[in-house]
Length: 180
Image 1 (tube, rainbow, N blue to C red):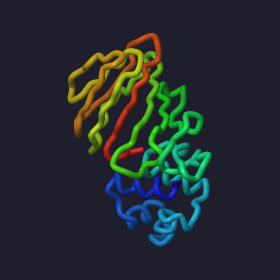
Image 2 (cartoon, helix red, strand yellow):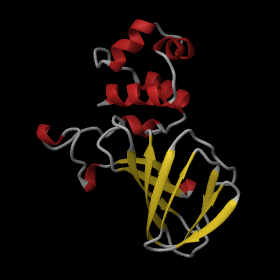
Image 3 (cartoon, rainbow, N blue to C red):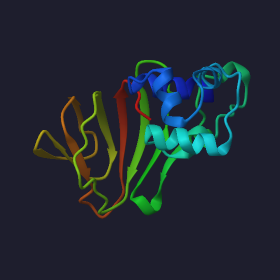
Image 4 (cartoon, rainbow, N blue to C red):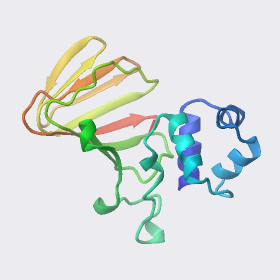
């Protein structure tokens, strides 16, 4: 699964094997072997991949599933990959089994008062469903206050968010193509 995740991240960012190899200071053959699961990157290599793709290194860990027939299909609640920390104000869990496919599903928990101060712009289509709490999202310069049961969708527009409430906001977020 690690190999598939690295390949999916590279493709989602529109990078070639040659570009990745150059940025990592590695050979194209080595990057290709990592993507095919023939070479296992060291922790230092994983750190370099995480920096290159701008993802937390924790994304590359916790790939085990209880049974082979569930691999790539089922994600058990206790085995989700956790992204982020409570200190950052945002903790996310990857609900998708991997980063392959045309979209990813993430469970995001926004701490009270947490906010994204600088708008992000990604070449993606994104949608979300507010499970609980209050959630503000700015899409293309317009703020929207959402509550439990509300949802949103946007494509290729700058966005940022904040939790104006006193309780955590829980949002199920769908992103296509996968960017984590």
